[in-house]
Image 1 (cartoon, rainbow, N blue to C red):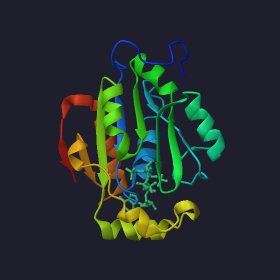
Image 2 (image 1 turned 180 degrees about the vertical axis):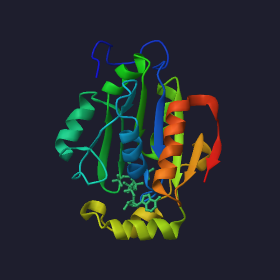
Image 3 (image 1 turned 60 degrees about the horizontal axis):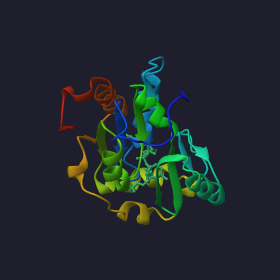
Image 4 (image 1 turned 30 degrees about the vertical axis):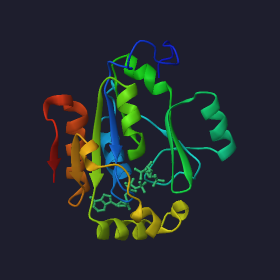
Length: 201
Ligand SMILES: Nc1ncnc2c1ncn2[C@@H]1O[C@H](COP(=O)(O)OP(=O)(O)OP(=O)(O)O)[C@@H](O)[C@H]1O
Ligand SMILES: O=P(O)(O)OC[C@H]1O[C@H](OP(=O)(O)O)[C@H](O)[C@@H]1O
């Protein structure tokens, strides 16, 4: 990561790099597709996959940094997050260092909450939102099969509705092969604006 840019945005939104935000309900497969896409993009120095700080333990499908609630609050107070949110009884944040990557013209890919889309669009010049989703029965089966200790009551996760699918530039209905859908995600990450607003399924 580079470290030459100021910490806060001054005149206007932060860019020119593209911020690709993966959003969608719990169990839809965001981390799964991100993991495959990250491996595919390995070696592309202009594409950065942001690690999240979360107040829960990491899981095999993701590469987050674990924090305590106290340390997380201190990081918010210190302005260390570009975006942060609460969900499922946990706190989540994407580090401010992504701003430098975007200023350097790189593409940054991050898994975030649907609740931060509006703020991200206000803060960043070039935002692409990718909704990863699946029907509720599939979400329920996947969350049950994943059996992640920190998931808590899975019905609460499935019942959580936030935002609208209209906020998304792309929708991946992740019901077929994960490799095929990850390829679609890589296309979106790499091709930028060439294919706007479509449903991939
Ligand atoms: N295309 C797919 N086909 C079958 N299973 C899948 C597919 N994509 C993901 N899964 C499985 O679904 C489960 C949930 O996926 P994952 O943890 O990536 O979801 P998520 O959207 O990141 O969820 P959360 O927001 O709760 O972290 C995992 O066990 C994963 O292996
Ligand atoms: O429902 P909304 O707010 O869109 O998403 C909230 C959060 O829920 C999931 O958390 P976890 O990784 O399963 O703990 C997502 O990764 C996201 O960060």
